[in-house]
Length: 208
Image (cartoon, rainbow, N blue to C red; front, side, top):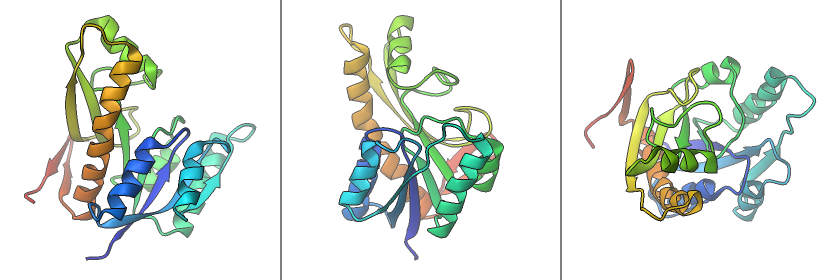
């Protein structure tokens, strides 16, 4: 079976990117990260890519139309013959242009148990503060396909973690992130092996 070609979009430090790269290197994913793209030229994710000799590109979004910016990204992904696009801390809202192009081939990670605590503004520490403020006893992470509904795509995998009495947004974020680093590579490997089947609102995992 051919190894899949993975493109990763990231806006920040790229710890999930690193987890994906490491999983590929360990043979846990039947694929390779072939290109990393950021909308932030100074994003450390790009440096992580370069350290692993992976093509890295920055496409700043300021001052240009959103669709024009996305077309630049699409062109880059196409040039690298990407099979799967992974959003790993990519802090830009997507338009239908790129979402429809990669329908069923674009995954995102969200630091909460969707459909709770998703949508506009729910990213980074904001999510964890919202979980704590609501009084939740559990939180976690969700890997899902990207659709035109923000954080509304079919759920692929989820993992829960406890919310402790003395948690801060930072301590909860750290606990959730550890699980993201395990869960994202697992979801990618299921895709690589053809084990994911979308049926309407659901994503079924076929027998492995």
